[in-house]
Image 1 (tube, rainbow, N blue to C red):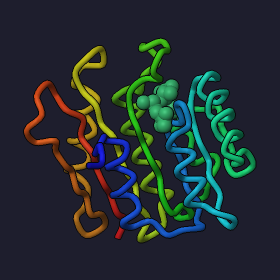
Image 2 (image 1 turned 180 degrees about the horizontal axis):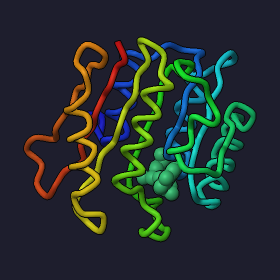
Image 3 (image 1 turned 30 degrees about the horizontal axis):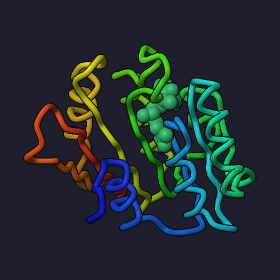
Image 4 (image 1 turned 90 degrees about the horizontal axis):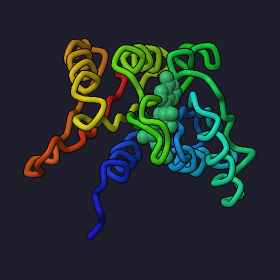
Length: 187
Ligand SMILES: C[S@@+](CC[C@H](N)C(=O)[O-])C[C@H]1O[C@@H](n2cnc3c(N)ncnc32)[C@H](O)[C@@H]1O
């Protein structure tokens, strides 16, 4: 059986809609696993932009990409994902991954935050092409509490159904605030 961990599941959902060889954004680079996934999808033709506010994330992502021979494929950007529109044009991006929370083993106070996460999703949706896809791994509980989850889910609920398909999944029988996988497609 596959593990169906949230990150793996979000990749599966993403692949159901994503074109290959496109332009992708990893909005929360961390240790680079999503960046690597997007680099593989980008193939020879595509490109990847990846964002994090921690140098440590850029360093470990660079090392991971290097070990996979992908270091030229992604542009690693030390900036908040709220600023992604500085680096890509409106309606130019095929897919965006968000994996909220904190970098494992680092300062938890540098985790993603409710308002900036919501603003980054808004910016990301603006940058997506029609038919473009966005996946979100949303966490709650622990140190970050429920505010980020609630802020994001409330915003997603408000999106115009004529413009976006929003699918919120659930690990339905899991206890203790399981993570929430989300898929958004821009119509
Ligand atoms: C759960 S980790 C991401 C895991 C990562 N995608 C991977 O594959 O390893 C969340 C990351 O978001 C980063 N982060 C927090 N606030 C951010 C912001 N405003 N802009 C971009 N990244 C941010 C954290 O530094 C952390 O590395």
